[in-house]
Image 1 (cartoon, rainbow, N blue to C red):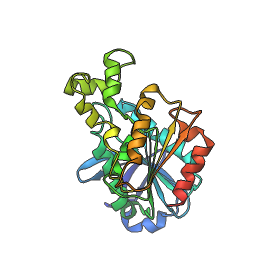
Image 2 (spheres, helix red, strand yellow):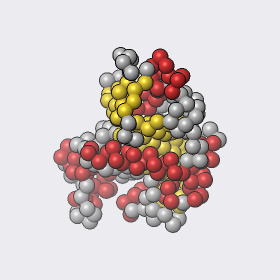
Image 3 (tube, helix red, strand yellow):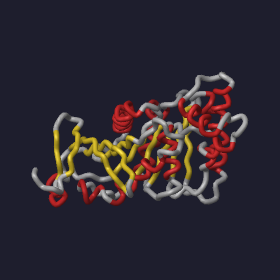
Image 4 (spheres, rainbow, N blue to C red):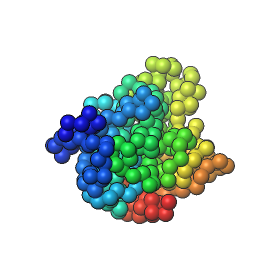
Length: 283
């Protein structure tokens, strides 16, 4: 296609394609899977779009967990897309997986990229790709759950799902690392370089912890947590849960705890999968 309005994509299926913005109706029912760099308000982020055959219905935006090195992020983004596609019953839902950056960034400093992807889907996806956004849902795993929880305080969508969201309490985690009781992480190392030891200066660590973001939810949200998750996660889980139950300005907040599962509870437990799909179906 020679149109200057074409968008160039890297296609995961080994093909190349572009879409003329004026002829979206011609491709609206075609399946495709592409990596696309999008821009919104000056912020750039890559996304993977997985649109099945047929007229698209809802959009599920998914956010991967921590991988640290940016060279691994696209693989994590694709794996996350596949994990959610496997448990999603409505196969005609378009999934958009967000390749938000991590390397060299303090926890939470990638929120602008996570937000840019959401705003692009809300305001530009239909015009640029012919994807109707009748309903938009957010879902995230681990650090992806952290990001969708924070996005829920900024923007309203049809619903949010967070599996094993974290980090919940960076001050606690990073103090354990200082004492060499657990393995050191890039997240705590970056925070130490910026703020010094968590034991001496815990407040900036707490300010970036998910425990600080337990109010002002604009959309219904479902939290899924495996009770066999890491001790660091479980140390703060009940406090986090109680803070949310006490929230007076939150939309409906649901919790599902999986007794015999760990960090990947949503993807491994049949009841969690059932609840995930029911949550989507009823909003």
